[in-house]
Length: 137
Image (cartoon, rainbow, N blue to C red; front, side, top):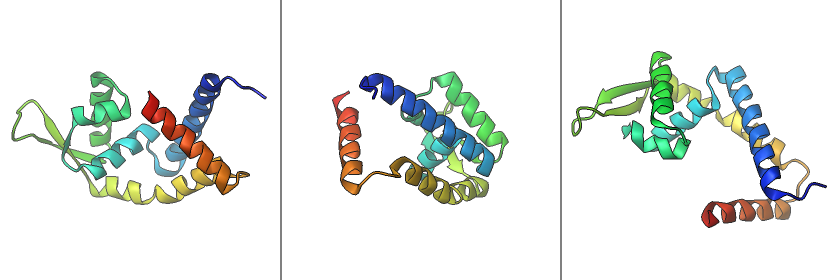
């Protein structure tokens, strides 16, 4: 069995992301990155585009393109920031909210696939390990 943790994490992340992206495209008509952005906006309605950059791990031009596509597809509204004329605040549209509601079964299915065949104790060990990585780096 492969023991190189960095290699395994990278390979697993890529496969899970690719699966999740295809699944959201097939069932919701949006990318997994757009879904992540919708979730962030829901948590912080009226957030600035730059506030999302670090969480989504996207550079400014990629983030601008993402926001443009989401606005064009009717998922978000961008309104000028009253404090900074160059910035825009982002809000969910009814369609964006609907996409989020329809996400719950997909997330549940993904979590079931990832945890299938593991005991609760084993899952808690994986959770502990992943949280350790998040704080250590």
